Image (cartoon, rainbow, N blue to C red; front, side, top):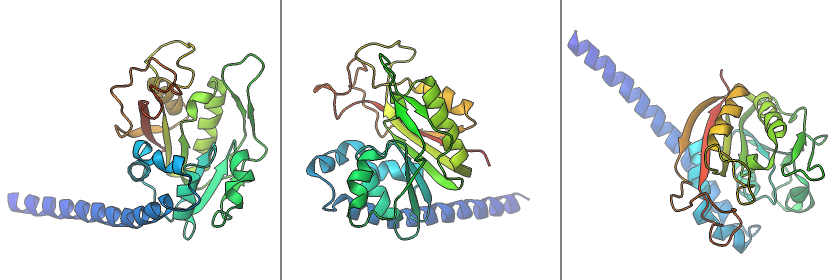
Amino acid sequence: MKKIVFNVTVIVLLGLFSLNALSADKFEAVQAKLEKAMQAPVRTEAEMIRDANRKPIETLKFFGLQDDMTVVELIPGGGWYTKLLAPVLADKGKLYAALGTGRIEKGLLKEKGFGKVVVSAKDSSMGRKPGARLYHLNVESLGVRNADIVFTFRNYHNFDADGRAAMNRTAFDALKPGGVYALVDHSRRHMEGDNDENRRRIDPVLAIMEIQAAGFVLEDYTKLHYRPDDELRFEVGRKTVTGNTDRWTLKFRKPR
């Protein structure tokens, strides 16, 4: 009996090893595409300098990116990550950009190689009311229902509670069962109230609670962007902090 149990265990372990090896092999192809994209002329010198701090290859590997996925990037800003995601997904995958896409629509998406990026949720709006500290967000749908991953990088802190709830709800609706909601943002001290120095930081515990309330399950986190020398005291744009902020990096999954 012990021999049979041992053999079954070996078979299971070998199977898991094979799956892990297959996953690693698949990401090798993604990594090669990422490395090429990171050296593309469309990227500025300033963007390249940030690679060492933002660790895009390690970050996207943690979140499970594959080149045949359907991906949504929320609030792409100037397109720092768009410039990496679009080339990876160009041949076999699909990239949607949603919410706050004005800058990439005017610039990046007109560049060669970025014509396949689809701008969705065009009827959405975001902004700050007079005197408000945070942005509000009006969005009913991201226009996608089968996404494998929804990304948002350093954006969650910008929105008020209703805006964050809308973002989480529409991300949930956009993902297929088993899909990943991937977030990175600047850390705030737990339960610290608003002040002039923490306006671009957010408590990771609060984020977890809000995202779980939308139906997601917290699957994993990584210390890739953990910075123990960031005391969480100063605004992230200060010269003594910028480029070295402590950031939480959380991976949620939509239940199957």
